[in-house]
Image (cartoon, rainbow, N blue to C red):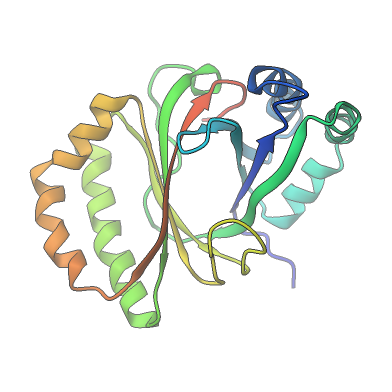
Length: 236
């Protein structure tokens, strides 16, 4: 049966810098981002983010309203074929660093916030991705329960925390971080460094840490990116 629930896709590339710099790669990609914004109502997010661990790597953060069917419609666009053809002919990409799909967790966190600004054009937003593996399903559900409750608090107390949510890996990764089916991906986005520090140092967040330490889990990765403003984090 086809999956029609919202899903998140992570696709990260390494730019072939001897043929083009990151700015040139983003210039080519931006046309695809604009096409997704104006021509794909079921594409909820499509933003290029620069890795803070490797400046030559760009993560394309994607969200699709109706799961695989929305993703298929995205891939079928003429602009998608044009992007692949253009970058291929110029040999702009060295390799695909990471790719995976994640399914939403019901009633957990949030993927967008009405900031009064236009998130579709905003660069410099800090995005953190944390991958966690649980050997025990009950421990995973407990972790989701505890962090989900904290997300509700953050939504009210931290207006500059723009995204605070999680999703579950739909398959094992064939490259990049060691992600297994069912692993939890946590996604947080902060307006700026001050917002990230406010979240980190919030007294309620600090009190939560001993509770989380009692939940058996393995952190697989923690990665940080900055949005380039070439696409959009959400539509609403």
